[in-house]
Amino acid sequence: MLCESNEELIALVEEARPFTKLGKVADYIPALGKANANDLSIAIHYPNGDCVAAGDVDRKITLQSISKVISLALVLMDRGCDYVFERVGMEPTGDPFNSIAKLESRGVTKPLNPMINAGALVVTHMIPGNSIEERVQRLVAFIQELADSEKVAFNEEVAHSEFETAHLNRALCYFLKQHGVINEDVDQLIDLYSKQCAIEMDCRDLADIGLVFAMDGVHPRTGKQIIPFDVARICKTFMVTCGMYNASGEFAIKIGIPAKSGVSGGIMGSVPGKVGIGIFGPALDEKGNSIGGIKLLELLAKKYSLSMF
Ligand SMILES: NC(=O)CC[C@H](N)C(=O)O
Image 1 (cartoon, rainbow, N blue to C red):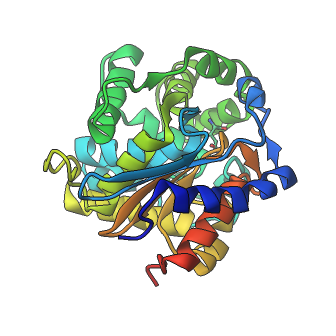
Image 2 (spheres, helix red, strand yellow):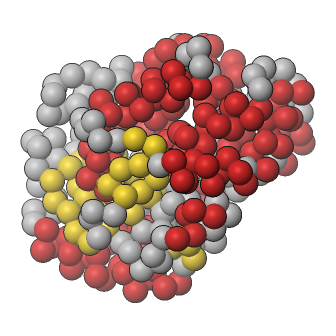
């Protein structure tokens, strides 16, 4: 057992909370700008069903980029590895998540990895279904199964706010369409992607999903293999190499946990074989990661020797 009580965790949250003052809430998606910069919450889920939590635990988070790991798992299951990796690569970029630079400069017609926006848009393009509604439903149902919660749904206001302002993501899509990597209507894909990023839950649900990846795709409570072992392994590897944007190297050295963050300030962590972690702290550092969340993970990793390396 790592952290045994809510009290132990509350002390760590309060130690990390002052760092939220050094960060800034993302507002390029206007609806995200409404978040409270001082919020910080965490839940840790154990395979035996125990959950410890601390901070503003009832706040809901939209997944944003955290959804990229989950949509990747879904398309790997639905389409197979060969199909997916013919269209998106496996290498970190060292660039910000929304950069367009390497799409052209590397002379490649496929994005370098599925965790940057260009790659994630290609992955979302691969979600099967006959309509946007059917494809959103496929993803939401999968996430409900991972979180073992039927409450999970997407936040209409955040989805709409992103759809209205996603000019850079549209630019990425037009580039990809020009090169034949995607072949659907760009606004339709942005609609689906905005809904995917706006899927919402609290940090306990997020920790539950992190736990499924930590346990090689098996949900410990239901005992069901929701994600095949190989797919869970691929997703965790991407979390290590690209999960924290262009701060993934430093994060691996200092913390050493497979993790994925989002501009909402969420971080999902999967400590292999041990625990799932869900964090919400909307104040971000300059790379776009939750500043309080990273501090909190640093404290946890040190105190309980969580690094996998
Ligand atoms: N880093 C992120 O969380 C980015 C997700 C966001 N929806 C975007 O595409 O801009």
